[in-house]
Image 1 (tube, one colour):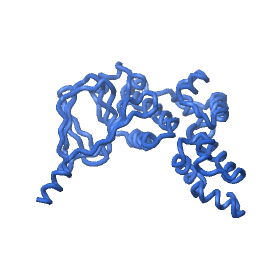
Image 2 (image 1 turned 30 degrees about the horizontal axis):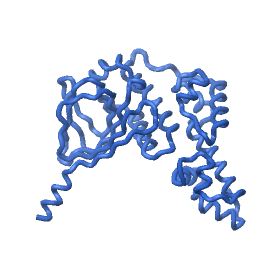
Image 3 (image 1 turned 90 degrees about the vertical axis):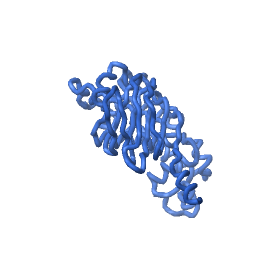
Image 4 (image 1 turned 135 degrees about the horizontal axis):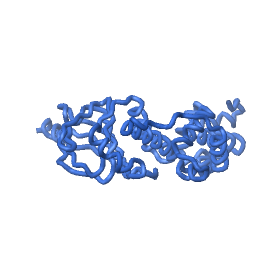
Length: 280
């Protein structure tokens, strides 16, 4: 009896869903299904799907498709599709639902014809985007990554047009750096920054990265961590107070980025200063 109850529990779906504060993202949806099969249905948003374990078999516009773990699937809005496990242990997937501001209706036909994309770079970027969306405070990183993902998806769906060749634009890069310097604590969204400097968001990210060898969100976090280091050592502030004073979402957000850049937690860094150890 106990074994049967355990088996029954193991077949229950495990899902999580949330709506992040990132323009264009309607919903983030993570799920692990072992037996559940989707009936035919439609969405009013684009479905960007990666499968981490197992595989999904689905019908789209009366054609059968599959999603092995090395592909990215893009299902267009308003087109019926279903879905069921293609392996005995089911599947684990991560999904982004994107509105028309990221991908327009003119791309629906191309997506119906070729919804499953074998592109390791794209898949890696989608995974990185999910990581950025998992915790609050990294909205600029998520928005930047989503912009480049959208650009790559459009290149797949419109291969004849492709994308504009990357070009250096030091003036544009400097203008964005000045904006980031002005708003180290307050922060700025990518769409707002692009509007202020009259540039396409994707070109803005690429111009900055080519000019400085670092993405805009990495630059902003570096500036915030530098400020945090000074406050921890010079003012003796607590990590929680320093997090709020330097633009981080909370202490955990500060700790994550601080340890990544400095190698120790803010608390240990603060203690080292109090003991007279070198600050690094």
